[in-house]
Image (tube, rainbow, N blue to C red):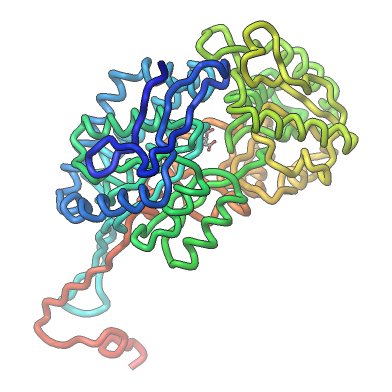
Length: 498
Ligand code: UN1
Protein backbone atom coordinates (compact mmCIF):
# COMPACT_ATOMS: atom_id res chain seq x y z
CA UNK A 1 0.00 0.00 0.00
CA UNK A 2 1.26 3.41 -0.93
CA UNK A 3 1.63 5.84 1.91
CA UNK A 4 -1.13 8.41 2.33
CA UNK A 5 -0.02 12.04 2.60
CA UNK A 6 -1.98 15.17 3.48
CA UNK A 7 -1.92 18.92 3.35
CA UNK A 8 -0.77 20.61 6.54
CA UNK A 9 -2.97 23.59 7.31
CA UNK A 10 -3.30 25.41 10.63
CA UNK A 11 -1.46 22.67 12.49
CA UNK A 12 -3.59 19.81 11.11
CA UNK A 13 -2.93 17.13 8.49
CA UNK A 14 -5.96 17.36 6.21
CA UNK A 15 -7.27 16.17 2.88
CA UNK A 16 -8.23 18.50 0.06
CA UNK A 17 -11.68 19.95 0.59
CA UNK A 18 -12.75 18.24 -2.64
CA UNK A 19 -11.41 14.89 -1.42
CA UNK A 20 -9.53 14.48 -4.72
CA UNK A 21 -6.09 12.84 -4.76
CA UNK A 22 -3.14 12.20 -7.05
CA UNK A 23 -0.37 9.59 -7.05
CA UNK A 24 3.34 10.17 -7.01
CA UNK A 25 5.46 7.47 -8.68
CA UNK A 26 9.10 6.49 -8.93
CA UNK A 27 10.55 7.65 -12.28
CA UNK A 28 13.02 4.74 -12.25
CA UNK A 29 10.19 2.25 -11.76
CA UNK A 30 6.79 3.60 -12.68
CA UNK A 31 5.02 0.65 -11.01
CA UNK A 32 6.12 1.91 -7.62
CA UNK A 33 3.73 4.39 -6.07
CA UNK A 34 5.53 6.55 -3.50
CA UNK A 35 2.41 8.08 -2.06
CA UNK A 36 -1.10 9.37 -2.56
CA UNK A 37 -1.54 13.12 -2.06
CA UNK A 38 -4.42 15.55 -1.85
CA UNK A 39 -5.17 17.23 -5.15
CA UNK A 40 -6.03 20.62 -3.75
CA UNK A 41 -7.78 23.65 -5.10
CA UNK A 42 -8.45 27.28 -4.38
CA UNK A 43 -10.43 26.61 -1.21
CA UNK A 44 -7.49 24.73 0.33
CA UNK A 45 -5.13 27.57 -0.49
CA UNK A 46 -7.56 30.06 1.03
CA UNK A 47 -7.72 28.04 4.25
CA UNK A 48 -3.92 27.89 4.36
CA UNK A 49 -3.67 31.66 3.87
CA UNK A 50 -6.20 32.21 6.65
CA UNK A 51 -4.08 30.08 8.98
CA UNK A 52 -0.87 31.82 7.91
CA UNK A 53 -2.48 35.20 8.54
CA UNK A 54 -3.66 34.23 12.02
CA UNK A 55 -0.22 32.95 13.03
CA UNK A 56 1.92 35.68 11.51
CA UNK A 57 1.94 38.42 14.16
CA UNK A 58 2.81 36.10 17.01
CA UNK A 59 5.53 34.41 14.97
CA UNK A 60 6.98 37.78 13.94
CA UNK A 61 6.96 38.95 17.55
CA UNK A 62 9.52 36.33 18.59
CA UNK A 63 13.07 37.65 18.83
CA UNK A 64 14.92 36.66 15.66
CA UNK A 65 17.43 34.44 17.54
CA UNK A 66 14.45 32.49 18.93
CA UNK A 67 13.23 31.72 15.44
CA UNK A 68 16.82 30.98 14.43
CA UNK A 69 17.05 28.43 17.24
CA UNK A 70 14.09 26.52 15.83
CA UNK A 71 15.71 26.54 12.38
CA UNK A 72 19.00 25.33 13.86
CA UNK A 73 17.13 22.49 15.52
CA UNK A 74 15.53 21.64 12.16
CA UNK A 75 19.09 21.43 10.81
CA UNK A 76 20.03 18.97 13.58
CA UNK A 77 17.00 16.80 12.79
CA UNK A 78 17.87 16.84 9.12
CA UNK A 79 21.42 15.73 9.91
CA UNK A 80 19.99 12.76 11.83
CA UNK A 81 17.63 11.87 9.01
CA UNK A 82 19.94 12.63 6.09
CA UNK A 83 20.36 9.13 4.69
CA UNK A 84 16.69 8.23 4.93
CA UNK A 85 15.64 11.52 3.31
CA UNK A 86 18.17 11.03 0.50
CA UNK A 87 16.75 7.57 -0.22
CA UNK A 88 13.19 8.84 -0.31
CA UNK A 89 14.26 11.64 -2.60
CA UNK A 90 16.01 9.24 -4.98
CA UNK A 91 12.87 7.11 -5.09
CA UNK A 92 10.60 10.00 -5.84
CA UNK A 93 12.83 12.09 -8.07
CA UNK A 94 15.33 9.67 -9.60
CA UNK A 95 18.71 11.35 -9.16
CA UNK A 96 21.49 9.23 -7.75
CA UNK A 97 22.01 8.86 -4.00
CA UNK A 98 25.27 10.79 -3.99
CA UNK A 99 23.34 13.75 -5.36
CA UNK A 100 20.27 13.45 -3.16
CA UNK A 101 22.61 13.35 -0.15
CA UNK A 102 24.07 16.58 -1.50
CA UNK A 103 20.60 18.03 -1.92
CA UNK A 104 19.68 17.28 1.71
CA UNK A 105 23.07 18.65 2.80
CA UNK A 106 22.27 21.91 1.05
CA UNK A 107 19.06 22.05 3.10
CA UNK A 108 21.09 21.50 6.27
CA UNK A 109 23.61 24.17 5.28
CA UNK A 110 20.81 26.64 4.60
CA UNK A 111 19.25 25.95 8.01
CA UNK A 112 22.57 26.40 9.82
CA UNK A 113 23.29 29.55 7.85
CA UNK A 114 19.94 30.95 9.06
CA UNK A 115 20.77 29.88 12.61
CA UNK A 116 23.83 32.14 12.47
CA UNK A 117 22.11 34.90 10.56
CA UNK A 118 19.53 35.13 13.34
CA UNK A 119 22.19 36.81 15.47
CA UNK A 120 23.25 39.18 12.71
CA UNK A 121 20.60 40.45 10.29
CA UNK A 122 22.74 43.55 10.17
CA UNK A 123 21.27 46.76 8.96
CA UNK A 124 22.97 50.02 8.16
CA UNK A 125 23.77 52.74 10.68
CA UNK A 126 24.76 56.02 9.17
CA UNK A 127 25.24 59.63 10.28
CA UNK A 128 22.35 61.96 9.70
CA UNK A 129 22.90 65.24 7.88
CA UNK A 130 21.42 66.98 10.93
CA UNK A 131 22.70 67.46 14.46
CA UNK A 132 21.44 65.23 17.26
CA UNK A 133 19.80 62.77 14.92
CA UNK A 134 20.66 59.20 14.04
CA UNK A 135 19.61 57.04 11.09
CA UNK A 136 19.60 53.27 10.70
CA UNK A 137 17.69 50.40 9.11
CA UNK A 138 15.86 47.37 10.44
CA UNK A 139 14.26 44.55 8.51
CA UNK A 140 10.64 43.47 8.93
CA UNK A 141 8.82 40.48 7.42
CA UNK A 142 6.63 40.98 4.36
CA UNK A 143 3.85 38.92 5.97
CA UNK A 144 2.75 35.77 4.16
CA UNK A 145 5.10 34.16 1.65
CA UNK A 146 3.86 31.95 -1.19
CA UNK A 147 6.52 29.42 -2.18
CA UNK A 148 6.30 27.44 -5.40
CA UNK A 149 9.17 25.02 -5.86
CA UNK A 150 10.47 22.65 -8.56
CA UNK A 151 11.15 18.91 -8.45
CA UNK A 152 14.85 18.86 -9.33
CA UNK A 153 16.08 19.94 -5.87
CA UNK A 154 13.18 18.77 -3.72
CA UNK A 155 14.87 19.60 -0.40
CA UNK A 156 17.43 22.31 -1.16
CA UNK A 157 15.21 24.72 -3.09
CA UNK A 158 12.27 24.61 -0.64
CA UNK A 159 14.85 25.31 2.10
CA UNK A 160 16.39 28.19 0.12
CA UNK A 161 12.99 29.84 0.25
CA UNK A 162 11.24 28.65 3.40
CA UNK A 163 14.16 29.09 5.79
CA UNK A 164 14.88 32.80 5.18
CA UNK A 165 11.13 33.51 4.95
CA UNK A 166 10.64 32.01 8.40
CA UNK A 167 13.72 33.56 9.94
CA UNK A 168 12.44 37.02 9.09
CA UNK A 169 9.04 36.32 10.65
CA UNK A 170 6.94 35.50 7.62
CA UNK A 171 4.47 32.66 7.63
CA UNK A 172 4.39 30.38 4.65
CA UNK A 173 2.04 28.76 2.15
CA UNK A 174 4.12 26.18 0.34
CA UNK A 175 3.25 24.38 -2.88
CA UNK A 176 5.91 21.85 -3.84
CA UNK A 177 6.12 20.34 -7.33
CA UNK A 178 3.61 17.52 -7.72
CA UNK A 179 6.48 15.25 -8.81
CA UNK A 180 8.20 15.58 -5.42
CA UNK A 181 5.57 16.12 -2.72
CA UNK A 182 6.90 13.46 -0.34
CA UNK A 183 10.30 15.08 0.26
CA UNK A 184 8.53 18.41 0.71
CA UNK A 185 6.22 16.86 3.30
CA UNK A 186 9.22 15.56 5.23
CA UNK A 187 10.62 19.10 5.34
CA UNK A 188 7.35 20.30 6.87
CA UNK A 189 7.43 17.46 9.42
CA UNK A 190 10.97 18.48 10.38
CA UNK A 191 9.86 22.08 10.88
CA UNK A 192 7.00 20.92 13.12
CA UNK A 193 9.30 18.69 15.15
CA UNK A 194 11.77 21.56 15.52
CA UNK A 195 9.02 23.69 17.08
CA UNK A 196 7.48 25.84 14.36
CA UNK A 197 4.03 26.77 15.76
CA UNK A 198 0.79 25.91 13.99
CA UNK A 199 -0.20 28.04 11.05
CA UNK A 200 3.37 29.20 10.46
CA UNK A 201 4.15 26.61 7.77
CA UNK A 202 1.32 25.34 5.60
CA UNK A 203 1.74 22.93 2.71
CA UNK A 204 -0.86 22.56 -0.03
CA UNK A 205 -0.33 19.83 -2.64
CA UNK A 206 -1.63 19.98 -6.16
CA UNK A 207 -1.14 21.37 -9.63
CA UNK A 208 0.25 24.71 -10.66
CA UNK A 209 -2.91 25.59 -12.53
CA UNK A 210 -5.08 25.23 -9.43
CA UNK A 211 -2.93 25.60 -6.30
CA UNK A 212 -0.22 27.74 -7.89
CA UNK A 213 -2.70 30.14 -9.48
CA UNK A 214 -4.61 30.50 -6.21
CA UNK A 215 -1.38 31.35 -4.38
CA UNK A 216 -0.12 33.93 -6.86
CA UNK A 217 -3.47 35.72 -7.04
CA UNK A 218 -4.35 35.69 -3.34
CA UNK A 219 -4.45 39.30 -2.14
CA UNK A 220 -3.08 38.48 1.32
CA UNK A 221 0.13 36.86 0.07
CA UNK A 222 2.69 39.63 -0.10
CA UNK A 223 5.67 37.85 -1.59
CA UNK A 224 5.93 35.04 -4.11
CA UNK A 225 9.09 33.05 -4.63
CA UNK A 226 9.18 30.71 -7.61
CA UNK A 227 11.77 28.48 -9.27
CA UNK A 228 10.85 26.91 -12.60
CA UNK A 229 10.41 27.67 -16.27
CA UNK A 230 10.57 31.12 -17.82
CA UNK A 231 7.08 30.64 -19.32
CA UNK A 232 5.48 30.09 -15.90
CA UNK A 233 7.70 32.73 -14.31
CA UNK A 234 6.44 35.28 -16.77
CA UNK A 235 2.83 34.32 -15.98
CA UNK A 236 3.52 34.73 -12.25
CA UNK A 237 5.14 38.11 -12.81
CA UNK A 238 2.09 39.21 -14.74
CA UNK A 239 -0.46 38.24 -12.09
CA UNK A 240 1.53 39.07 -8.99
CA UNK A 241 3.08 42.18 -10.53
CA UNK A 242 -0.32 43.61 -11.27
CA UNK A 243 -1.23 43.12 -7.61
CA UNK A 244 2.03 44.82 -6.56
CA UNK A 245 3.37 41.80 -4.72
CA UNK A 246 7.06 41.19 -4.29
CA UNK A 247 8.05 38.49 -6.77
CA UNK A 248 11.28 36.56 -6.96
CA UNK A 249 11.76 34.38 -10.03
CA UNK A 250 14.53 31.87 -10.61
CA UNK A 251 14.03 30.62 -14.15
CA UNK A 252 15.69 28.82 -17.03
CA UNK A 253 19.25 28.49 -18.18
CA UNK A 254 21.26 27.46 -21.24
CA UNK A 255 24.60 27.41 -19.55
CA UNK A 256 27.83 27.33 -21.55
CA UNK A 257 31.15 25.76 -20.68
CA UNK A 258 34.00 27.20 -22.75
CA UNK A 259 37.18 25.17 -23.18
CA UNK A 260 40.20 27.04 -24.57
CA UNK A 261 43.16 25.33 -26.24
CA UNK A 262 45.39 26.11 -23.24
CA UNK A 263 43.02 24.40 -20.77
CA UNK A 264 43.76 21.33 -18.70
CA UNK A 265 41.67 19.10 -20.94
CA UNK A 266 41.28 16.26 -18.44
CA UNK A 267 39.91 18.70 -15.90
CA UNK A 268 37.59 20.27 -18.47
CA UNK A 269 36.38 16.80 -19.38
CA UNK A 270 35.50 15.93 -15.78
CA UNK A 271 33.74 19.28 -15.56
CA UNK A 272 31.53 18.85 -18.58
CA UNK A 273 30.59 15.26 -17.71
CA UNK A 274 29.41 16.40 -14.30
CA UNK A 275 27.84 19.62 -15.54
CA UNK A 276 25.94 18.10 -18.46
CA UNK A 277 24.95 14.68 -17.15
CA UNK A 278 24.81 15.17 -13.37
CA UNK A 279 21.16 15.20 -12.20
CA UNK A 280 20.50 13.77 -15.69
CA UNK A 281 20.93 17.31 -17.01
CA UNK A 282 17.92 18.49 -15.03
CA UNK A 283 19.38 21.54 -13.35
CA UNK A 284 18.75 25.10 -14.33
CA UNK A 285 22.53 25.39 -14.01
CA UNK A 286 23.24 22.29 -16.15
CA UNK A 287 25.90 22.60 -18.85
CA UNK A 288 23.83 22.42 -22.00
CA UNK A 289 26.27 24.12 -24.36
CA UNK A 290 29.91 23.19 -24.74
CA UNK A 291 31.95 25.75 -26.64
CA UNK A 292 35.27 24.34 -27.78
CA UNK A 293 38.21 26.32 -29.09
CA UNK A 294 38.98 25.17 -32.63
CA UNK A 295 42.47 23.67 -32.07
CA UNK A 296 41.15 21.17 -29.50
CA UNK A 297 37.67 20.63 -31.01
CA UNK A 298 38.19 17.17 -32.52
CA UNK A 299 40.43 15.87 -29.77
CA UNK A 300 38.13 16.97 -26.95
CA UNK A 301 35.04 15.53 -28.62
CA UNK A 302 36.83 12.20 -28.92
CA UNK A 303 37.74 12.27 -25.23
CA UNK A 304 34.21 13.30 -24.27
CA UNK A 305 32.42 10.59 -26.23
CA UNK A 306 34.81 7.97 -24.91
CA UNK A 307 33.93 8.88 -21.33
CA UNK A 308 30.24 9.75 -21.74
CA UNK A 309 29.46 6.39 -23.28
CA UNK A 310 30.79 4.70 -20.16
CA UNK A 311 28.30 6.47 -17.87
CA UNK A 312 26.19 3.86 -16.17
CA UNK A 313 22.46 4.50 -16.43
CA UNK A 314 20.06 3.03 -13.91
CA UNK A 315 18.20 3.30 -10.64
CA UNK A 316 19.82 5.97 -8.48
CA UNK A 317 19.61 3.75 -5.39
CA UNK A 318 22.36 1.58 -6.92
CA UNK A 319 25.60 3.25 -5.78
CA UNK A 320 27.42 2.23 -8.98
CA UNK A 321 25.01 4.18 -11.20
CA UNK A 322 26.14 7.53 -12.67
CA UNK A 323 22.89 8.79 -14.13
CA UNK A 324 19.28 8.20 -13.10
CA UNK A 325 16.03 8.64 -15.02
CA UNK A 326 14.35 11.87 -16.04
CA UNK A 327 11.43 12.95 -13.91
CA UNK A 328 8.38 11.68 -15.82
CA UNK A 329 7.07 10.48 -19.15
CA UNK A 330 6.08 13.92 -20.33
CA UNK A 331 9.58 15.28 -19.74
CA UNK A 332 11.10 12.24 -21.41
CA UNK A 333 8.99 12.81 -24.51
CA UNK A 334 9.85 16.50 -24.56
CA UNK A 335 13.56 15.71 -24.44
CA UNK A 336 13.23 13.07 -27.18
CA UNK A 337 11.39 15.66 -29.27
CA UNK A 338 14.28 18.08 -28.84
CA UNK A 339 16.65 15.36 -30.00
CA UNK A 340 14.57 15.03 -33.18
CA UNK A 341 14.56 18.81 -33.58
CA UNK A 342 18.35 18.83 -33.31
CA UNK A 343 18.68 16.18 -36.03
CA UNK A 344 16.26 18.01 -38.31
CA UNK A 345 18.14 21.25 -37.81
CA UNK A 346 21.30 19.59 -39.12
CA UNK A 347 23.28 19.17 -35.88
CA UNK A 348 25.27 15.95 -35.82
CA UNK A 349 24.30 13.41 -33.12
CA UNK A 350 27.39 11.50 -32.07
CA UNK A 351 26.22 9.81 -28.89
CA UNK A 352 22.96 8.55 -27.45
CA UNK A 353 19.74 10.07 -28.65
CA UNK A 354 17.37 7.37 -27.55
CA UNK A 355 15.27 6.19 -24.67
CA UNK A 356 17.21 3.63 -22.63
CA UNK A 357 15.29 0.47 -21.77
CA UNK A 358 17.91 -2.15 -20.83
CA UNK A 359 16.81 -4.56 -18.07
CA UNK A 360 15.00 -2.87 -15.20
CA UNK A 361 15.26 0.48 -16.95
CA UNK A 362 12.34 -0.50 -19.16
CA UNK A 363 10.13 0.29 -16.17
CA UNK A 364 11.20 3.93 -15.99
CA UNK A 365 11.94 7.07 -17.97
CA UNK A 366 15.59 6.84 -18.96
CA UNK A 367 17.40 8.64 -21.77
CA UNK A 368 20.93 7.97 -23.00
CA UNK A 369 23.52 10.70 -22.49
CA UNK A 370 23.22 12.56 -25.77
CA UNK A 371 25.77 14.71 -27.56
CA UNK A 372 25.30 16.83 -30.68
CA UNK A 373 28.27 18.39 -32.43
CA UNK A 374 28.46 21.11 -35.09
CA UNK A 375 25.63 22.94 -33.35
CA UNK A 376 25.04 26.44 -34.73
CA UNK A 377 23.77 29.34 -32.63
CA UNK A 378 20.56 29.76 -34.61
CA UNK A 379 19.48 26.18 -33.86
CA UNK A 380 16.80 25.59 -31.24
CA UNK A 381 18.99 23.05 -29.42
CA UNK A 382 21.54 25.84 -28.92
CA UNK A 383 18.94 28.34 -27.72
CA UNK A 384 16.19 26.52 -25.83
CA UNK A 385 16.34 24.92 -22.41
CA UNK A 386 15.94 21.14 -22.81
CA UNK A 387 16.30 20.11 -19.15
CA UNK A 388 17.69 16.68 -19.88
CA UNK A 389 20.98 14.87 -20.65
CA UNK A 390 21.53 16.58 -24.00
CA UNK A 391 24.72 18.50 -24.72
CA UNK A 392 25.18 20.79 -27.72
CA UNK A 393 28.76 21.30 -28.86
CA UNK A 394 29.86 24.31 -30.90
CA UNK A 395 33.23 25.34 -32.33
CA UNK A 396 34.75 28.74 -31.53
CA UNK A 397 37.43 30.32 -33.73
CA UNK A 398 39.09 32.20 -30.87
CA UNK A 399 38.46 33.62 -27.39
CA UNK A 400 36.28 36.52 -28.58
CA UNK A 401 34.16 34.17 -30.65
CA UNK A 402 33.77 31.81 -27.68
CA UNK A 403 32.46 34.66 -25.53
CA UNK A 404 30.18 35.83 -28.31
CA UNK A 405 28.72 32.32 -28.64
CA UNK A 406 28.32 31.97 -24.88
CA UNK A 407 26.44 35.27 -24.71
CA UNK A 408 24.24 34.38 -27.67
CA UNK A 409 21.36 33.32 -25.44
CA UNK A 410 18.23 34.79 -23.94
CA UNK A 411 19.26 33.18 -20.65
CA UNK A 412 22.09 34.09 -18.29
CA UNK A 413 22.30 31.91 -15.21
CA UNK A 414 25.60 30.06 -15.02
CA UNK A 415 28.73 29.97 -17.19
CA UNK A 416 32.16 28.42 -17.10
CA UNK A 417 35.55 28.76 -18.73
CA UNK A 418 38.44 26.34 -18.66
CA UNK A 419 41.75 28.02 -19.38
CA UNK A 420 45.18 28.24 -17.77
CA UNK A 421 45.65 31.78 -19.06
CA UNK A 422 44.86 34.25 -16.27
CA UNK A 423 44.19 37.03 -18.74
CA UNK A 424 41.50 35.01 -20.54
CA UNK A 425 39.95 33.88 -17.26
CA UNK A 426 39.69 37.44 -15.96
CA UNK A 427 38.38 38.73 -19.27
CA UNK A 428 35.72 35.99 -19.33
CA UNK A 429 34.61 36.91 -15.81
CA UNK A 430 34.17 40.46 -17.06
CA UNK A 431 32.40 39.61 -20.33
CA UNK A 432 30.21 36.57 -19.73
CA UNK A 433 26.57 37.62 -19.38
CA UNK A 434 25.54 35.42 -16.47
CA UNK A 435 24.73 35.62 -12.79
CA UNK A 436 27.42 33.04 -12.04
CA UNK A 437 30.80 32.39 -13.67
CA UNK A 438 33.03 29.47 -12.78
CA UNK A 439 36.70 29.34 -13.69
CA UNK A 440 38.07 25.83 -14.19
CA UNK A 441 34.93 24.34 -12.65
CA UNK A 442 31.63 23.18 -14.15
CA UNK A 443 28.49 25.32 -14.40
CA UNK A 444 26.79 23.49 -11.51
CA UNK A 445 27.47 23.41 -7.80
CA UNK A 446 26.43 26.73 -6.31
CA UNK A 447 27.05 27.10 -2.57
CA UNK A 448 24.19 28.20 -0.33
CA UNK A 449 25.94 31.17 1.27
CA UNK A 450 26.59 32.92 -2.03
CA UNK A 451 24.11 34.76 -4.23
CA UNK A 452 22.31 32.55 -6.73
CA UNK A 453 20.45 33.87 -9.74
CA UNK A 454 20.82 35.05 -13.27
CA UNK A 455 20.53 37.87 -15.76
CA UNK A 456 18.32 38.26 -18.87
CA UNK A 457 15.35 35.84 -19.00
CA UNK A 458 16.72 33.76 -16.14
CA UNK A 459 15.00 35.90 -13.58
CA UNK A 460 13.75 39.28 -12.52
CA UNK A 461 16.84 40.60 -10.79
CA UNK A 462 16.71 38.86 -7.44
CA UNK A 463 19.29 36.58 -5.87
CA UNK A 464 18.66 33.68 -3.55
CA UNK A 465 21.26 32.34 -1.15
CA UNK A 466 23.35 33.91 1.58
CA UNK A 467 22.21 37.25 2.94
CA UNK A 468 20.88 38.37 -0.44
CA UNK A 469 17.74 36.23 -0.19
CA UNK A 470 16.72 38.25 2.86
CA UNK A 471 15.96 41.15 0.52
CA UNK A 472 13.19 39.06 -1.01
CA UNK A 473 11.42 38.10 2.19
CA UNK A 474 12.09 41.29 4.13
CA UNK A 475 10.91 44.86 4.02
CA UNK A 476 13.53 47.36 5.06
CA UNK A 477 12.43 50.06 7.44
CA UNK A 478 14.51 53.23 7.62
CA UNK A 479 14.51 54.75 11.08
CA UNK A 480 15.36 58.37 11.94
CA UNK A 481 15.62 59.31 15.59
CA UNK A 482 15.84 63.03 16.25
CA UNK A 483 16.95 63.86 19.79
CA UNK A 484 17.57 67.56 19.22
CA UNK A 485 14.25 68.56 20.77
CA UNK A 486 13.41 70.89 17.90
CA UNK A 487 12.04 70.66 14.37
CA UNK A 488 14.93 70.11 11.99
CA UNK A 489 14.27 70.31 8.27
CA UNK A 490 16.35 67.95 6.17
CA UNK A 491 17.77 69.47 2.98
CA UNK A 492 16.65 72.93 4.19
CA UNK A 493 18.47 73.35 7.47
CA UNK A 494 21.46 71.57 5.93
CA UNK A 495 21.71 73.44 2.64
CA UNK A 496 25.48 73.46 2.16
CA UNK A 497 25.25 76.04 -0.60
CA UNK A 498 23.88 78.66 1.79
C1 UN1 B 1 18.43 24.58 -9.97
O1 UN1 B 1 18.69 23.73 -10.80
O2 UN1 B 1 17.29 25.12 -9.96
O3 UN1 B 1 24.28 25.15 -8.54
C2 UN1 B 1 19.33 24.99 -8.90
C3 UN1 B 1 23.63 24.12 -8.64
C4 UN1 B 1 22.64 23.75 -7.59
C5 UN1 B 1 21.40 24.54 -7.73
C6 UN1 B 1 20.63 24.28 -8.93
N1 UN1 B 1 23.20 23.97 -6.29
O4 UN1 B 1 23.78 23.40 -9.60
